Structures are given as structure tokens and as C-alpha cells.
Length: 257
Image (tube, rainbow, N blue to C red; front, side, top):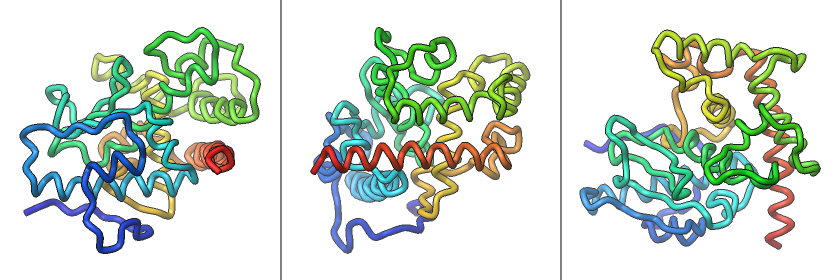
């Protein structure tokens, strides 16, 4: 029995069946690769789920198709190129975003933000390395390229990573560092991971709902550990993300006209 995913949002495709070719063409992904073990019925069903999720992402962000594919630089893999025990991952080396066949739903938002955070690094700072994320660079550099959009993006990183006064690490960071210490890893408290989880929360709080795109920022075990923004901090993060992506979307719509 195929799994169903809660969704509340606009109808993006009517009664029309869509394929992964439609996904690639609409969003102009660099490539879309499907694993050899994905059956035809799985392929057909997953294409529709991906199509709706990416359209919902575009709707929430107020952007364009080129934002979703990061101007055609992003590759999408489904049921291919995964890592053992990992349902989804983004690879900076290949600029590709991979979801496992049966374990990736709900992970699109997190991995897309990793791709965005990587893509935007050399728009925020000069002299960046190939695998660097803007969020991590923001913590150590103070020479961001002057631009109103960059100012808004820095406000997002500042709100996520620091307290309201901007003088100490945020509670989100502290809880994440605590979880890392308990697990003996350095993962949850990395800036790029904090920001990806904050972005997930922002998307899940939007009026448009899609559990194939994002889920788990409120009721999951990670949420109960404080690994997602909560309360007033979550509200502040949502506001700065809304401000940034609204203005980015307006700029992209003007550029694409």
C-alpha cells in the first residue's frame, strides 16, 4: 500500500499526470537521475509528489522556478547515490541533492536549504572555497558583499545562530551542542545544520502544508530535544526568512520578466 502524505495547498497540475522529465523541465534542474531499483509505478507516483513539493516550496518562498534549481546548477537524484543509513543528503562536490527511495520524504526542505546555503556563499562573500556554506562563513567573516539582499540574509543567520542581543549563541545552538555532546558527535551544532533545521521550521509553519516537503519540526524526537527553533525565537526566525525570501522573490520575478 503506497504511503500517503498530508498536503494542503494549491492544485499545481490538475488531473494531469507528471513525470520526472516534467520536474526537470519545469524547474530546469541540471539533471534528474532515478535509481535502477525504482519501479515504474513508484516513479510515476514519486514524480507527482516531487512536483507538488517543489511547487509548494516555490509558493511559500514567493520565488521562481530558477530559485528552486538555483539557476539550473542543482542536480536531483532519487533512489540513487545514497549513503548507508542516510535518507537524504546534499553533496557540495557535485551540487546534487539525493533522496533514498523509501526514506527521503519530509527531507526535501532540509536538503534544499543546504544546496541554497552552498550556492549563495560566493554571492555573500568573495574568495570562497568550493565546498563552503554561507552560514558557516558568516560566523567567521565580517566582509560580506554590500547588497540589500545580503543584509537580509545575514539577518537570518544572525537570528538563528545568536541571541536577540547578538552577543551570545542562541538557545537553539546551546541545545544542539548539548545533543552533540550526549551523542559524542559534532553535527547538530554545525551552523549549516542549525540553519537548515530553522528553514524546515519556517516552511512547516507556512499556510501551505506538504509532509513530503517537510515534517517533524514540532512533534519529532529532535523537536522534543530542542533541535528546532521554539516559541518567540521561532517567530523571529520565521519573520526574517519571510522578509529575505519575499524580497529575493521580487528581485527574481523582475529579472525573469
